Each structure stands twice: as C-alpha cells, then as structure tokens.
Image (cartoon, rainbow, N blue to C red; front, side, top):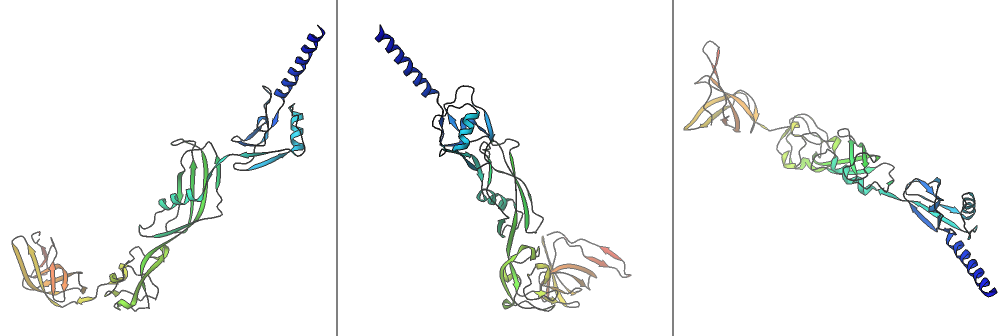
Length: 330
C-alpha cells in the first residue's frame, strides 16, 4: 500500500514537472514581422492562451532593432511570461518586412513617359534617391501617376503609387525628383558665316546637342545644309534649322523663263518673265505678255518653271482691272 502511494506521488511530481515544461515560454532568436506594432508573441513562443498583447512600436519599414536580455527580463516580468532561461546575454532581433522600390523600378517608367523627340538620346538621374520601403502587403505593380516635366527643362518630378494589388485604388504614394539630359543629333556650323553665304561641306558637322539649344526644325544630316544659303549671320557652333537656310536664288525678277503646263490631254509651253527671285523648288510668279496672265509655278532650273497643279492665273485687262480663270486640274 505504501509503495503504491509512493508511486502515485512520483507520477504526480513528474506530471507537474512536465506541465511546467510545456507552459514555460521560449525566447525567439529573431523574428520577421509585417505589422507596425510588436506583439509579445514576436519575442516569446509558448505563451498561455490570451496572454499575447501589443507591447510597443515595430521597427520602421525595412529596418530592424535588437532587444537585449535585461529588457527581455523586464518584459517577461511585466506581462507574466514564464521565461525560465532568462539571461542578460539573451537577445532578439526584430525585422520589419518590406517591399523595396529601387531606381531600377523607377527609371524605365520615367524614360518611357518623357515627351522628347523619338531620336533623342536621354540620360535620367535621380536626386538624393534611396530605395523606398513599402508595406510588404502592397504587392500591386508600380504605377506612374503623374510626371511633371516642363517642356525642354531638365528638372522633373514623378509621382508613383504602389497599390495593394493590381487594379486596386489607394496604396503607398512615392515622390521622386531628378534631372533629364536629352540630346539630339544636329547639324553644327564649324565656322561663323555671313548672311547670304552658301554653306559648303567643310562648313558643317554633326553632333549631339542638348535639346534645349536645338531649333524645332533642326537639320539632322550635313547634306541637308550643304549648298543652301544662310538667311542671317550665324556664329560657329550654331545648330542649323531649315528656317535659317534658303535655296540659292537661280532666277531673279525680270529673268526670262520657259513656263510649262502638263494636264490631261494638254501640254502647254509659253514664255514668261519672272516677277520674284527664287531658288530651285521655290514658287514664283511669272508674267506672260502674250496672254497678259500672271502664272504661279515652281522653279525647276535657271530658265524653267512648271505651273503648279490647280493654280489660278491672274488675267490683267487692258484697263488694269483683274479677272480670274482656272487652268484644268492635272
């Protein structure tokens, strides 16, 4: 009987010891968390039901901090945690999980959204940029909400949003600033030229020029300038546009020319006198004395003008009054 009672007591002691081991809390060596408040269970496992509570602020997104042994002991005592292995040398590292938005995510979207000439070469730089940490639950694709880039200016500001999921509204907003260096290939004068001077092959070269210093009608090939005449004096280094150049004048006012008109079942050739100076390809007025008409045509050579399709000649009467007639359309 005595022996049976001793066995019963021994089993009871073992059961109590076992229960104590089961209920004792264990320190976590580290924890990754996705919320903004630290839970007691982020530090200790094996808590009793209902024991878990918020105990403080979590690290900033993507950051971490370490809780030392003395602070852990104080926390365990404050919240009644049965931490039997308490030690000043113990520690827990808490890391706040985050999704990182990097320059590699942002730059391609900015380049694609910039309004610059198709053939421009651009370099985009970000000002004081560090990767952004956003909540890990924001898993939607990065969205460029707005890009502020005033014309040909260098500075820009871009506004991005990271939604919770694709197509969702709201989410985390990000703002990025930077500069754009855009260059286009243009035709550049090697030397200064005077008004009326003809551009020679050795006078020009091509190179990359900052977009802000390029005219809207900038030439892109040296051949587009060679043989043309500059309207006004230009300095060396100037980027040439088509409006700055003229075709060499090969007919002058009073130049006799042969005027040709081709139409359905009709070919006319008459003589005339040029009323305007012009280069090859320019439109000029030509007076025909026989018909007393003023024709409009395109200069084809030093003595040849072709009447334009559908052009309306001006008939000059004996008393100076004007009447109009229309040539048949081509």
